[in-house]
Length: 190
Ligand SMILES: C[S@@+](CC[C@H](N)C(=O)[O-])C[C@H]1O[C@@H](n2cnc3c(N)ncnc32)[C@H](O)[C@@H]1O
Image (cartoon, rainbow, N blue to C red; front, side):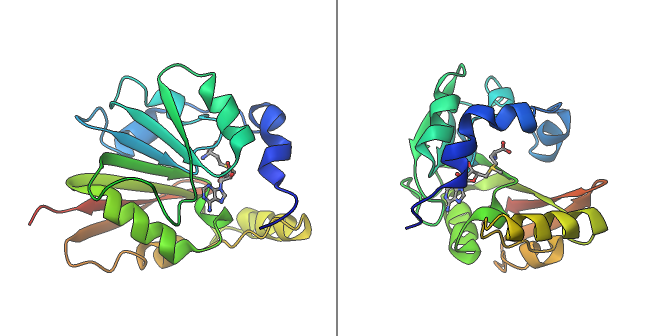
């Protein structure tokens, strides 16, 4: 367990430096609105989840930083849950939609995290992982900067993230933006 958590420290200023962005792209990738619950895994201050309120119900933000979740608690319609994404406190198939934005490269165990996202996704559901695209030069610099800041980040390229869903009933595709990519995973019904 680290004695210093960067995100506990950053929580009060986080959205000053990383402001909310227009949600339409995520709505489209996540095929929202949807009937059922939505999980924002590693959702932090609820910067992204606040725009999912009204598009699915309930909207749950899971994060291990209590300070980040404290900010999420102040936003309408979000249910903060303190949890590691490597071991989520939800039953199998609990969520119609799962999103994870800018968080996969921060978790300690990415394989355990994606296994948990898959387990808690309902058949017929969809999960979207948005990450900085390591194939771009800018993101390579970002990865280096986070290493120098001792953030223990571990970036994977979008195809490597896609490989973390080797299930026969997974339909996986990658969408690419300027510096970001979205790995979109559908859990097909049997
Ligand atoms: C860069 S922030 C992104 C927050 C939010 N998704 C957003 O886009 O604004 C990364 C978040 O991942 C959380 N995090 C890192 N490792 C985690 C883990 N293993 N389980 C749950 N949350 C984790 C951090 O506490 C932090 O809030």
